[in-house]
Length: 565
Image (cartoon, rainbow, N blue to C red; front, side, top):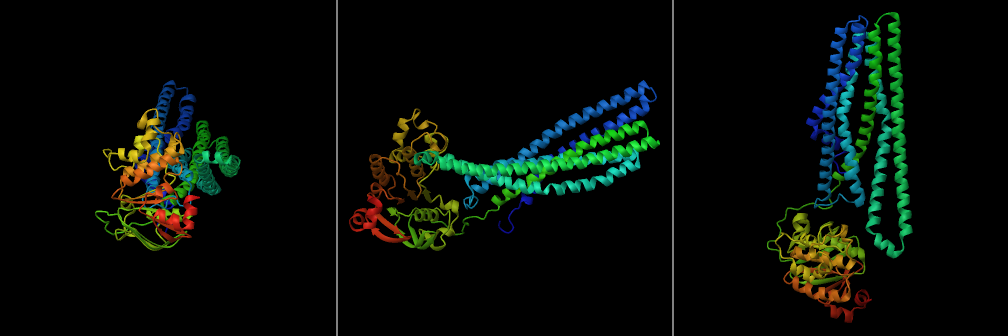
């Protein structure tokens, strides 16, 4: 975590601070509810001494009326306070989800480093909910402390020894409860980590289910998930045992404390130091105290788990950015010239390359890692470890990542589709809803896909476009990239699942629809490379050949092996 970044404590305190007005209101209502509950055994004791013992019917009715008022007030306060409290917890969790969403979608990136998408989803749902629960229990904790204080005062009025017993006994009990909750917090954090990892693995397996079936790798996938799930289950069981032990230990301590209050009260009544009504009130208060102590146990457990979840949220929020925005002025207008000098990153080894503005350039490499590293640099998802990439003479590292992506669009090979209509999927790439997307649909042959669907382009696609074949998904994704109409478009293997006839049509149309703009095709498709102005070959992370497709086919054996094999 970077120095000065948010910690779990910062996240939890921030969530509480955002809801402080609701929490204060709910706490006051909860304290009123607990005060009325604490007064019930006191009033019953008074009824015994002043009405039952004297046989006064009028006094009995007056005190019974007061008792009814107490029940009305405490029930009203509980209902209202609970509604406000639950609302505060939900709002706190929602605010955290918005923060996480903003961080994950930050153009600078970095939040998803070393985290599976399913793990991020788990943090944004389960962990945010647990922090919301920690916010929710604060009014209950305040109400429980108020109940203990009021009970102590009432017992002091009945008997000083009883009151002192409560006042002196409560702090050690609270301290022991806090100490006992430490293992629960640690095991809860482990539980959430394992659950998030299991969610991430499950999401990845579901996303690649078709590929796994095609490879016959279902058993290996099941075995992998079974091990991950078992680890998650073991962590959850350890956390459950810790919580059960925590609650059992606190309940045992509380029981001993309440029994001591009852015994002292009985001893004082036998000596005549307190009346029968006082004894009933003391025993009633002792039994009532079990509720606030159980409530504090619940609050302590929820807070322990909330702190663990807040720490996981803080790790995402404090994740260092993958790239930082620069202060350079972007080119205006954008011609689209790309220049690489000494670019090194991962599999790339000092690449020098000039791509002319408005050209259609092919880049061929058999190394998937080199292709991915190049795409990451051009999209500025990662900056080169060495060297510089320029757009019209301006270094990409000097530009704001969000602004840069309005000039350079990198369309990856595995682009996902959204669970909306085909038309909306394509329009997602356009700047405005009025942009004419017909040329993009035609150039990508996605118009043919639309004609095969029941409602045409208005047909709603399944999640990630799974209702389409692989080739159909690629065509819709390509249409979306073309509809964006960026000055520079980088396409990575856009037609690997498309039949050869359709691929040839796309290649011819692609050149026409992108005329006057810079287009880079990172591919080994001979149909696409045949329509390029120039092809650059990367081998072992460096440029090894440069020429037209026909020239390289005739003269370069490595190129022939990569493209025609």
